[in-house]
Image (cartoon, rainbow, N blue to C red; front, top):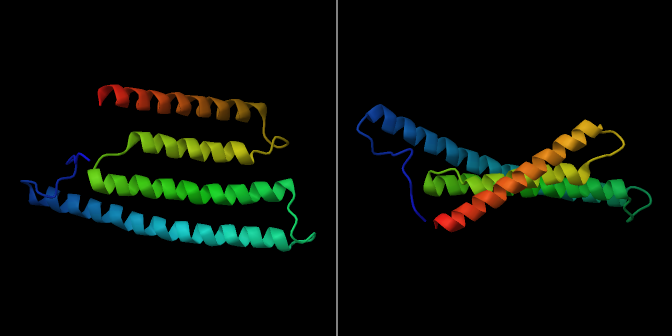
Length: 150
Protein backbone atom coordinates (compact mmCIF):
# COMPACT_ATOMS: atom_id res chain seq x y z
CA UNK A 1 0.00 0.00 0.00
CA UNK A 2 1.48 3.31 -1.05
CA UNK A 3 1.71 5.95 1.68
CA UNK A 4 1.00 9.55 0.79
CA UNK A 5 2.09 12.30 3.10
CA UNK A 6 -0.64 14.93 2.95
CA UNK A 7 -0.15 15.41 6.70
CA UNK A 8 3.58 14.86 7.24
CA UNK A 9 4.63 14.87 10.88
CA UNK A 10 8.11 15.85 9.72
CA UNK A 11 7.76 19.39 8.38
CA UNK A 12 10.13 22.35 8.27
CA UNK A 13 7.57 24.48 10.14
CA UNK A 14 7.29 23.08 13.67
CA UNK A 15 3.78 24.50 14.13
CA UNK A 16 2.52 22.76 10.97
CA UNK A 17 4.17 19.48 12.05
CA UNK A 18 2.49 19.80 15.47
CA UNK A 19 -0.89 20.54 13.88
CA UNK A 20 -0.54 17.52 11.58
CA UNK A 21 0.14 15.35 14.65
CA UNK A 22 -2.98 16.77 16.31
CA UNK A 23 -5.09 15.99 13.25
CA UNK A 24 -3.79 12.42 13.16
CA UNK A 25 -4.60 12.09 16.86
CA UNK A 26 -8.12 13.42 16.19
CA UNK A 27 -8.59 10.79 13.47
CA UNK A 28 -7.50 8.08 15.92
CA UNK A 29 -9.99 9.39 18.48
CA UNK A 30 -12.68 9.22 15.78
CA UNK A 31 -11.73 5.58 15.12
CA UNK A 32 -12.12 4.73 18.82
CA UNK A 33 -15.46 6.55 18.97
CA UNK A 34 -16.68 4.74 15.86
CA UNK A 35 -15.87 1.38 17.47
CA UNK A 36 -18.01 2.46 20.45
CA UNK A 37 -20.81 3.44 18.08
CA UNK A 38 -20.56 0.02 16.40
CA UNK A 39 -20.83 -1.81 19.74
CA UNK A 40 -23.78 0.34 20.84
CA UNK A 41 -25.33 -0.31 17.44
CA UNK A 42 -24.99 -4.07 17.92
CA UNK A 43 -26.64 -3.73 21.34
CA UNK A 44 -29.44 -1.75 19.66
CA UNK A 45 -29.91 -4.50 17.04
CA UNK A 46 -30.20 -7.08 19.83
CA UNK A 47 -32.67 -4.86 21.70
CA UNK A 48 -34.82 -4.18 18.62
CA UNK A 49 -34.87 -7.88 17.74
CA UNK A 50 -35.72 -8.89 21.31
CA UNK A 51 -38.42 -6.23 21.65
CA UNK A 52 -40.06 -7.22 18.38
CA UNK A 53 -39.90 -10.94 19.16
CA UNK A 54 -41.40 -10.49 22.64
CA UNK A 55 -44.29 -8.29 21.50
CA UNK A 56 -47.48 -10.34 21.03
CA UNK A 57 -47.80 -12.47 19.03
CA UNK A 58 -44.57 -13.72 20.60
CA UNK A 59 -41.79 -14.97 18.29
CA UNK A 60 -43.56 -13.71 15.18
CA UNK A 61 -42.43 -10.76 13.11
CA UNK A 62 -44.56 -8.74 10.75
CA UNK A 63 -43.19 -6.87 7.74
CA UNK A 64 -42.73 -3.57 9.58
CA UNK A 65 -40.80 -5.37 12.36
CA UNK A 66 -38.52 -6.97 9.78
CA UNK A 67 -37.86 -3.57 8.20
CA UNK A 68 -37.00 -2.08 11.61
CA UNK A 69 -34.55 -4.92 12.20
CA UNK A 70 -33.04 -4.49 8.72
CA UNK A 71 -32.65 -0.77 9.37
CA UNK A 72 -30.85 -1.44 12.66
CA UNK A 73 -28.53 -3.97 10.98
CA UNK A 74 -27.74 -1.61 8.12
CA UNK A 75 -26.90 1.27 10.45
CA UNK A 76 -24.29 -0.94 12.11
CA UNK A 77 -22.91 -2.02 8.72
CA UNK A 78 -22.66 1.63 7.64
CA UNK A 79 -20.81 2.43 10.87
CA UNK A 80 -18.37 -0.41 10.09
CA UNK A 81 -17.84 1.03 6.59
CA UNK A 82 -17.11 4.45 8.12
CA UNK A 83 -14.66 2.83 10.53
CA UNK A 84 -12.92 1.19 7.57
CA UNK A 85 -12.70 4.62 5.91
CA UNK A 86 -11.06 6.04 9.03
CA UNK A 87 -8.56 3.17 9.34
CA UNK A 88 -7.63 3.33 5.68
CA UNK A 89 -7.15 7.08 6.01
CA UNK A 90 -4.86 6.53 9.01
CA UNK A 91 -2.77 4.04 7.05
CA UNK A 92 -2.40 6.05 3.86
CA UNK A 93 -3.29 9.70 4.63
CA UNK A 94 -5.55 9.55 1.56
CA UNK A 95 -9.33 9.55 1.53
CA UNK A 96 -10.32 6.19 -0.03
CA UNK A 97 -12.72 7.47 -2.69
CA UNK A 98 -14.08 4.09 -3.79
CA UNK A 99 -14.77 3.05 -0.19
CA UNK A 100 -16.44 6.39 0.55
CA UNK A 101 -18.70 5.95 -2.49
CA UNK A 102 -19.48 2.36 -1.42
CA UNK A 103 -20.40 3.65 2.05
CA UNK A 104 -22.68 6.26 0.52
CA UNK A 105 -24.28 3.57 -1.66
CA UNK A 106 -24.91 1.44 1.41
CA UNK A 107 -26.44 4.40 3.25
CA UNK A 108 -28.79 5.25 0.39
CA UNK A 109 -29.61 1.54 -0.04
CA UNK A 110 -30.67 1.53 3.61
CA UNK A 111 -33.03 4.41 2.85
CA UNK A 112 -34.46 2.52 -0.11
CA UNK A 113 -34.95 -0.67 1.92
CA UNK A 114 -36.84 1.05 4.74
CA UNK A 115 -38.75 3.55 2.61
CA UNK A 116 -42.45 3.81 3.46
CA UNK A 117 -44.16 4.39 0.15
CA UNK A 118 -47.33 5.51 1.95
CA UNK A 119 -45.65 8.58 3.44
CA UNK A 120 -43.09 9.76 0.88
CA UNK A 121 -43.74 11.98 -2.10
CA UNK A 122 -42.93 11.07 -5.69
CA UNK A 123 -40.28 13.83 -5.67
CA UNK A 124 -38.51 12.07 -2.81
CA UNK A 125 -38.55 8.77 -4.69
CA UNK A 126 -37.22 10.39 -7.88
CA UNK A 127 -34.50 12.21 -5.94
CA UNK A 128 -33.50 9.00 -4.15
CA UNK A 129 -33.34 7.11 -7.42
CA UNK A 130 -31.19 9.88 -8.91
CA UNK A 131 -28.76 9.60 -5.99
CA UNK A 132 -28.62 5.79 -6.31
CA UNK A 133 -28.02 6.01 -10.06
CA UNK A 134 -25.37 8.73 -9.67
CA UNK A 135 -23.51 6.85 -6.96
CA UNK A 136 -23.71 3.60 -8.92
CA UNK A 137 -22.28 5.21 -12.04
CA UNK A 138 -19.59 6.96 -9.98
CA UNK A 139 -18.63 3.71 -8.24
CA UNK A 140 -18.39 1.94 -11.59
CA UNK A 141 -16.30 4.71 -13.16
CA UNK A 142 -13.93 4.97 -10.21
CA UNK A 143 -13.42 1.19 -10.24
CA UNK A 144 -13.09 1.07 -14.04
CA UNK A 145 -10.54 3.88 -14.27
CA UNK A 146 -8.64 2.64 -11.22
CA UNK A 147 -8.26 -0.73 -12.97
CA UNK A 148 -7.08 0.95 -16.19
CA UNK A 149 -4.61 3.23 -14.39
CA UNK A 150 -3.17 0.46 -12.19
